[in-house]
Image (tube, rainbow, N blue to C red; front, side, top):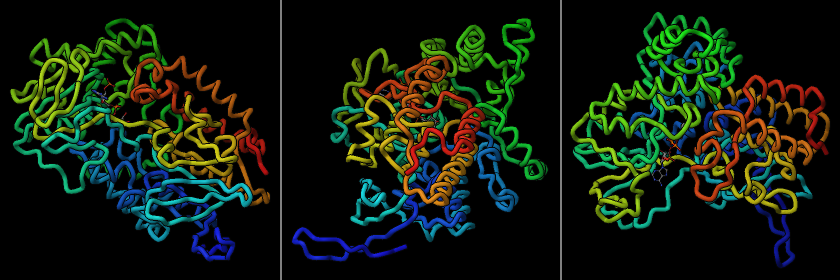
Length: 544
Ligand code: NA7
């Protein structure tokens, strides 16, 4: 580590440039970055993680907006790799909030002494593959440079914030921010006229929380979402003991389900039972916390078709029951997309917010936002005066965070150019022509940590295979990549996540190709596929 490298200057004289050398560079110190660092170090690789933020935690470092919390059960979201960690850490709530999640990831960084290999405030601006030496050269914004054999992008799937290109934002006299860059010192919203643009998973968490303190809230909604009560609660001492005693069973359950959540689908079809029995199950599960309402429901509730529409109508009626004004209620009832085709937010008192006198819901599908003015937001039919504007407008998912890194592979081609019409990878992990680059962020989906841990393990094993067999490079073959891209398109066309225009398919970003950005397969299928690939000597990969 920390070698100096001799280089030849333009004038032909030797100069010595200090350049840190590592076996692996990890970009990002969030959930996957921290675990990658832990695992690779344990396997004897020299590693350095570069993190843009001023602290570790990734998603849980940046998303400090009020109301930010898990929708997954806290005890299913923690790392499983250390029994000691599992026993030491007490999750305080069933669905833990951002401050606690950030504390947890800091605790992990300290406990495993990860900080000594993490450089904070280090934004990567380019990564260039040196073909002669088979090494990646990484350039940071502050001028620092480093090289490594392997490059791992642990930059998250939702980390490149999306701001609509509204004219006039610089003229706004009040304060504004994107939820993904919420200021660490907080935003003073007490007694203010606040506008929120966006009603996705972030917007519904935020709105329910800030409606308690603002003077007036204007919500600019383009698409109504299917949301359901989270029903969060503290974890009492007895439950804490039970959780700690049953981690192996909890994780085993998670590993058996399609999205790595702890809930098992009911194998029956909603349509094969009587209407009474169907409704009884819908109601019983509705009273339960979290995603159980749909992920433990009849299995076909989450497949396009009759059962899905039947459940959608059940949820629509639940929304109608909670909102007093029938006109506002109908604005909040989703009618233009299938249940589950967009990410399903869980909420805590979201719909009741619209019963408050100081809350206004504005339909910006009917009258789109035209511009931001010095006073607030101007739509096609009115101007709304505001002191604060909050953009809960989402992310340029998966590829957005990769594009920001400006990655150049063999022959100087950029990953951004290669991905113009959608990601071209093999299993989300590797792209032909980009040797020793593992795009970990592009392959995890579902209950994030449960999906990320086995993925990091697989990548680490692949790196060991390269090292032990004296190869210098590994990358997907063009054939394997083409077949995977075709598979994503074909299998993806049949699943719920591709049926609506959302970040799942890049449709939230104007001009972005409409392609499923993650795997269409379930987590167990993905793991089995990767295991088979490894067992067959990394079939589909070029080893040199
Ligand atoms: P989402 O789910 O992409 O939601 C973004 C929201 O912003 C959504 O309601 C959008 O409406 C709205 N939006 C975006 N652009 C505009 C414009 N130009 N005008 C009005 N409204 C707009 O992002 P989130 O941050 O809520 O959630 C991201 C993920 O984080 C989530 O899935 C969880 O996994 C965690 P639209 O629906 O596109 O009409």
